[in-house]
Length: 320
Ligand code: AVJ
Image 1 (spheres, protein in one colour):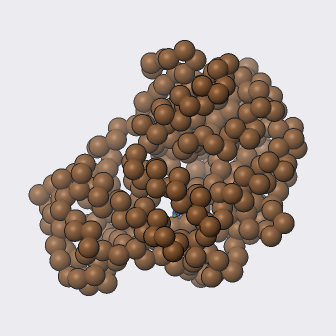
Image 2 (cartoon, rainbow, N blue to C red; image 1 turned 120 degrees about the vertical axis):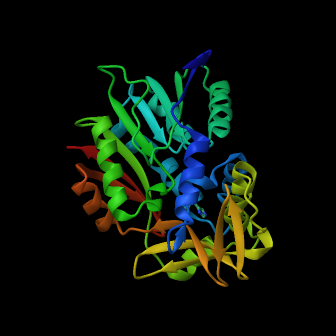
């Protein structure tokens, strides 16, 4: 643990080992698949920030309007003087909407992208010099322990952006159970969940006209080339994203345009024409579906807020 003023930093994440192991394993399975968590190197995190400003990508701005409109109600449920844990904090923009009213005892942003986490924590500290920040580099999709967990301080968690959608429903259940366990009885989880809607609106949100989402998807191959010395040819792949109504999810893939071979760590991986690497699922839920899932994982649904067009939902859940 190192500390700058009130910024404590904990590094719980073995970066390189994971990337190599999971990429080699993912490309050895059929169909090929690589976890979306590897999108978020420094450049990938910047591209995602650009995605959140796209006309087609409604989730971020819609969630922000909900948090702004119902901030007082939300703060009342979260409670003051708590240790506020944010999973997948990214650039810590949304938390600012709650910080002024919340006055938490401490704030723990958790993110897999170390550089982005530190930069965001420093920027936040400049604006909130009295905030006790415990920046934690960890992979929340895996088991991890809270590096700072003072007794007698109530805990609340914030999981915005519908990142819960990246988990298969069975994994989402396991993740929510882990969160309920480290929060403890009567603690609160505030979670953003993108809702099921017209497939055309969903397809547009993941196939923006400027091609930023395509660049975000392809950046995964560039990252593997840089960090694992692979020889992916960007021109041999194209971005392919669509809504799968049977499974209620957006699927993102990288499709191979021609038959070819890629070498990573001395291993050869063969790609047929039109073969894909599945790089992300983004499940969408109705309010009832999500509340039912949360219930099975040990949460009681306390309150849910949506925007007028019912594009996005923010749920307040309590550990039972
Ligand atoms: C950050 C996982 C919520 O699935 O909508 C945005 C990531 N992928 N555009 C999502 C993403 C393509 C985003 N999450």
